[in-house]
Structure formats: C-alpha cells, structure tokens
Image 1 (spheres, helix red, strand yellow):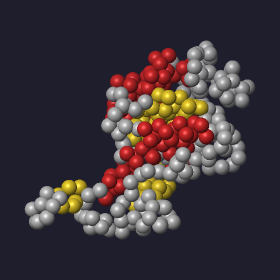
Image 2 (tube, one colour; image 1 turned 30 degrees about the vertical axis):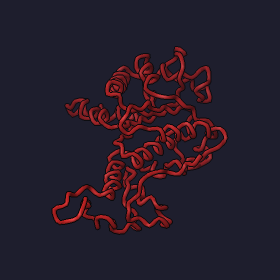
Image 3 (tube, one colour; image 1 turned 45 degrees about the vertical axis):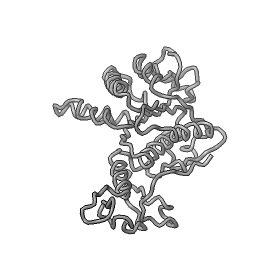
Image 4 (spheres, one colour; image 1 turned 90 degrees about the vertical axis):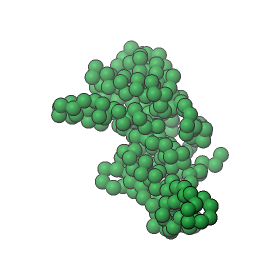
Length: 289
C-alpha cells in the first residue's frame, strides 16, 4: 500500500524541492505550537499571478472564480488553528515508525483516512495501548493529513489541559461555552489522553458534556488512551504494580475512567485500534505516545 500523501499542492511549487518534497508547505515549531507556512520554493501562481482569482472565459467582464492556489493558503490557516503542540511538528504518516507489531493498525488508520467523507458522517478512531507506542504521533499525523488532503477544520486538545483551562475560566467568572463551543463546531476533534486525570466528578461532567455535544452533532471524534475497551473491571485507578498494559488484569478499562454513558457513546462513534510495539520513549527517541 502506498502511504504517501495525496494532498493537493500549490501550482507554483517546485516539485523537485528537497525541503518540502513537493508538498508546497512546511510545518515548524514556533513557541508552543506547530505552525505551517508556504515553502520558500513556491513561486507566484501561474494561473492567477497570486491575485487569488481566475477568469472564466474571455473579456474584461468575464466572471471570475477563486483560484485553486488559495486552497493551500486556507489549509495552512486551518492547520494553524488546530492547536497542535510544537513537540508534534514532526508527526506525519511518513515519519511514523512502522514495525510488524503496529503495521496492521497503521494500515487500518491509513484506510480510514482514504475513505473519509468530507461532507458525510464519519465514524472516528480511538487509538489505545501502553505509553510510548506512538498513539499521539499517529493521531496528529491523521489530523494533519485530513486538514491538508480534505480541508477539514480540526482541533487537538490534551484532556488534562482542557480541564485546567476550564477551571481557569470558571475562576475568572466565565462559562464553559467559550471553550467547548469551538470544540463542537470543528469537523474533527482529537482528544489526547482520554481517561487521564484524577477521575473526579468535575472531570467526568466535562468529558460527558464534550462527548455528548460531538455525538449529537454527528461530528467526527478521535482520541488516544492508555486504557483499553471492554466491560468494566470495577477499578477506577490503575494498579501501579502493573506494567501498564491495557490488557493487564489490574488495569482499569476505559469505561472505568470515563463512565458508562460516555463509553457507550464512544463505542458507537469510534473504531478502537490497539497500538503495540516497543516503547520509543525508553529508546530515547522524539516519539509521542
């Protein structure tokens, strides 16, 4: 299977460029965030000369339409609005390190990307497994691919950071809507570390409201989790004597961490795929899991 991107490029790109490799854009670290920009190899658009519009027919009064070169500018803007942290700037499908233990899941995710319907309902994904297996890398790579291939709007949130932001908002006298409404409206919401936290009633209320909003909007949800699917094991906190595998008897399941109502909706909304393999963090690599 060819795992190279099918993303559209700017008409003025140098297809031989050794920096962007013909994609016409770069993703770099800028402060806290991953930020995309046009590659320096991109020349003025041959169709519109960077005016952004092309004539449909001859003559001065011929109607004009938006040039296709505007597409990459808009997708760069949408990527920069997704809130992907700087540490994930390198995360692409190509840089994901595949091996015999994770290849099946990678192929499933790649197939899901290919079958994504820009204007249809799409069941989401939850990637689960032990820490350091590349779950966050693959989720970010998928979000990036969806933005630049299909032009979706997306947001990336780390669950514990979302909780902290909500608490800060409440402390200032604000409400949850200012933070949750944008997360409801985007085409794709990617939540890192589902089930992470202290498992308080407040955290449960937040995740319930967010998942319920996405569910009612029939909007695509993605997530990563250290906890696997399946029936409750009756434990809400992990047994620290266990090695951390979602399959270990002492580890809670995702349902134990997020509650029956949220988990039931996640099962309906998402496919669950396990990522196995070596712990890349222990190998000292800049890998995210």
